[in-house]
Image (cartoon, rainbow, N blue to C red; front, side):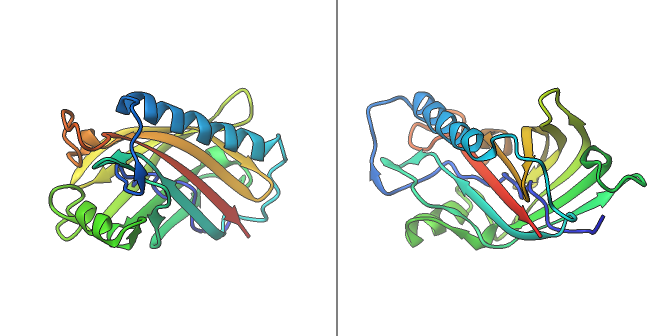
Length: 212
């Protein structure tokens, strides 16, 4: 199996921020839950149990989107332009995804949101502190196959100098794609204070990776 870019481009970096349209009256938690349910429904619709057909783990494209609410607005379009990863087979069976290891990195300075001002604010020491901590990284520790054919990818996520155990589940392989969504708690990494009323501490993310 070839080395390559991988899915878990870190979901990681999702933001809990935003800024394009007026906020609703929903509490932050309910708004985030609604976003996550919408993302998961979209993933389920796209997959439809298609067999995984990629010839290897070399990635053609990675789409990383994230959402949340901050400063009275809802984030509409966002992502990271610099994300790299490597999938390394751990056994002779190169087709067995559960027998691989994923190493991934994301350059935080490549963040894009609806507003350049918001982007710079999120990259500042008040939030991601990208100048001091320019890279977010993920290293898988285990990958297990679920009964429905999807996968649970466990590992360590390092963000803003802090490393935490995290599990992306379910990760679905279909066609030539790997897809997953996740609720990232940014307060665990010191990006957003748990009692911050202006910025969502929970940021929903969606990752879609297309393999060659």
